[in-house]
Image 1: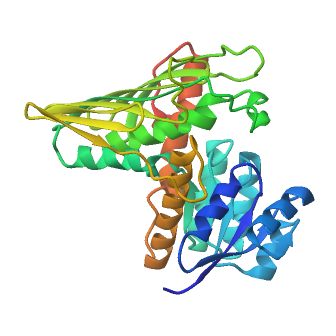
Image 2: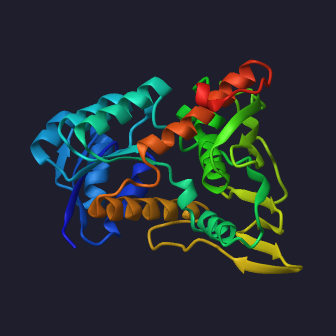
Length: 343
């Protein structure tokens, strides 16, 4: 396999996982990194032995001319960086949330289309091995045609300690976490034609919502509930596990606590442990997310080498982002049912 030289923009909290992920893929190397914060840039460069370090993204991309760029910055910076990469004909991976607005997201997709370069959004939750196991069980036909689903993420984990900016935005849980759960619902049950949402702010020390409940009508006929909470204190803290229920015409499946999958079909129930592997650089309880980072990056490399569109392309992610916007709009209107395609 030919070598691929990548570049990373953004050396923050989560990007360390991406650097570990790239290091584990044969034939891929990160040739340069960029961050406006000299301390973060130095820490990342020293940790991973990257000598070429830049404080300006355009200078880095013009000098290094990488085979792809991994943008791991916050959403407000994405459009300018994606359009810069597109102008230089450099394939792009962009962190989620893809953009602050759908207009920005559409512009980024159009820029990459016009330049003829691939664009993938780092929407990694669907790449967790337990979620992939649910997808395989569903596609096997064992439970028949799905008619109901639930994607649930409920926790009281202190996410603000490592990412204090999460407490400061007017939008929080749907934009940061719910976007993953909504993408999982799309991955498993298909696109949605209607959205109804309610949100709450339970924690008085944050600005945005920390609880969200969303009802989706899927175009293939299923109904799903997507619920997220960072205000739920449970007997067993399950962070960062996503729980899934799907009922079908011939059976049901449940992804329960601690990655236990139960598939009921034909009067029998099959139980399977679908725990994610603990990669050498990963740590509990984050290992399921860390594993999904490595998995989505492998998918990117395979797609790039094969010349095919990645599964979580910019174009695909517009549909997930439209669900996020529809959820906020619905909640603002007291739970009015809205069409995501109209956003």
